[in-house]
Image 1 (spheres, rainbow, N blue to C red):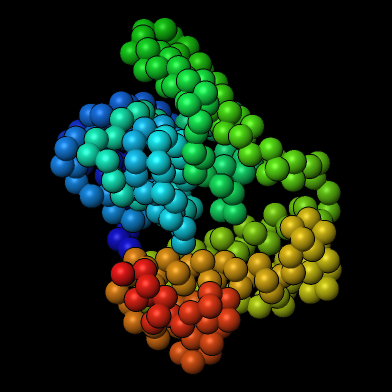
Image 2 (spheres, helix red, strand yellow):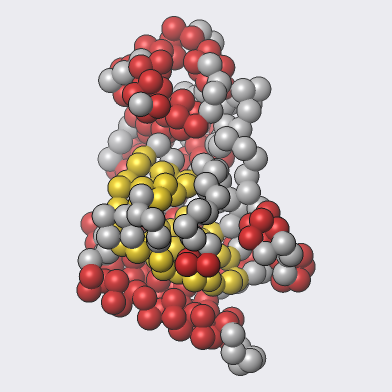
Length: 302
């Protein structure tokens, strides 16, 4: 993967200028029609993380690659992209249409924490296929965004924040099972939240020289100043998985990303993920992914 794409990079590549609100760092929001960016021969989008948030409404057959997953879209989709998860689009139809908005986390400073919403969390589901009825309810929100951002109303950005929240909550209502998991904070959930933050902070792995530091349950327990058994009980209570399983799942996810989207050899990938021996990494990966790293890479290339 290349370095993380910044909001400045986005404007330089698409508009050849950077808005003052981006340069100032006070918070930025914008909304666009996808048709202006997805012509007959658009440049391929690199599989990368961006340092900004993006919500897209796309009509047409396409394939979304995010983290270690691939989702084929037959008709229309809404996608919530965040700075933690790498992604790209693979167009299947000749022409894609729709809308997307981009915004920085500072745009919501003092207005809420976007990372509390499952659609923007690493283990959430950011790709939502829409029915025709859902498309009819989501499309007007983007149309209102376009109208509002072109208005001279002094408080238009307050309205635009509300519209972003409207999109977020519309998405959450489409996945009630995930929302139901969100409950009032308690001690176990607080410990679980801190654990997940520490786990995610080690990613992305962007260079073969980078090395994952916290690899075992005891590593995380020591960092959080709790007994490893207490950490394990908290995670099982709130996330229904053990510490070791959560670590393993995230390591496998990053390994799949690196195997699919880099040309690093298996030894380099294993070393960056904290494995001293390539054989240990290969055995670990095969146990959790049902294929050796080399076989998985070959399957993905094919």
